[in-house]
Length: 400
Image (tube, rainbow, N blue to C red; front, top):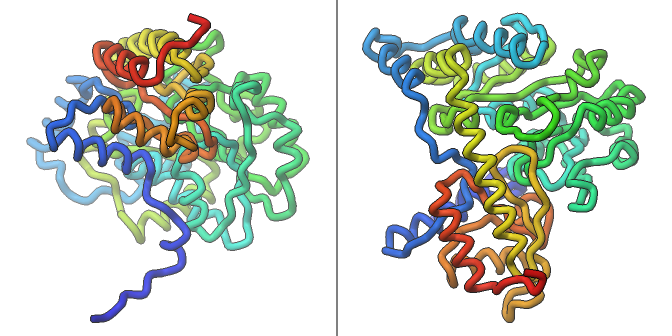
């Protein structure tokens, strides 16, 4: 019996913890367990009807062949128009690359820009895939830890301290997965002031939760706050979250022509074009009536208020308000200390799944031990049921 020798790059990365928890929850459901899943970052809303209609029309008209690697002209123009309309940013079609999801855009970016020895600054808590995508490119993640007291946002002094001669890229994600924290224009300007002193550092702005926002300030990314840095900024976005189109797998990147061209070359030798039908649907989403987005955002905000109150009612649990996305990132360290046989956030997540059939994702998957991420991209009925179950297992705070 032969033994297959796997590449070192595979040994350095791990499967997505979010998908692992979701998979286990689905297995328990299939076995008849009444599991409430608060793990996956996926809106529970259906894709808007006008978007589905555009896809159906594309199928019926035979639009089922290869397209240009970087996306159909109609979608690239819709992306250009979206940046002008929503962000007051000017791009041309050669500065746009459409990919099979925002994750794919980030993967292309890492493969095109990074080499062994390069370092990438990632503020923690971070989206689970950033470090692994960086390591697959042979580069090294440099994690900058933040905490609840600073709103889970990196401070300029932390950024300055993390930059060295090997630093090639900074990844910013606002609104954040997993915390829902949002950088203000002033905070981004302060980070930009640091970056001006280090011209070798590129910036990736992951804006996938741009529209899922309820703070006092309109959405701002670092290109808005620091327009003089735009030649060093690559913006990643997509239709998955705002339009409930996770399964359609359409993301896009915008940035300097030479970087986008290099990313297109990577894509041409991996996936080629994104799905033709999904591209037509994405163009309809970006160009059509945006009222559907506001309807979903209003529901997410209402759910946020409910889960925030419910979590802070639990013994040993603390959570601060989010300003966007659809996650609560709660400190469970007190609950961990109070629970016999539970010593960390991974064991707490397993304990909650076993004892009250609620699936959450351990904070250590996001680089922040002692926390749990709970997605509120589900119905209010299920959220209330999950909070009731958690309270029965963990108890109510003495302050209540």
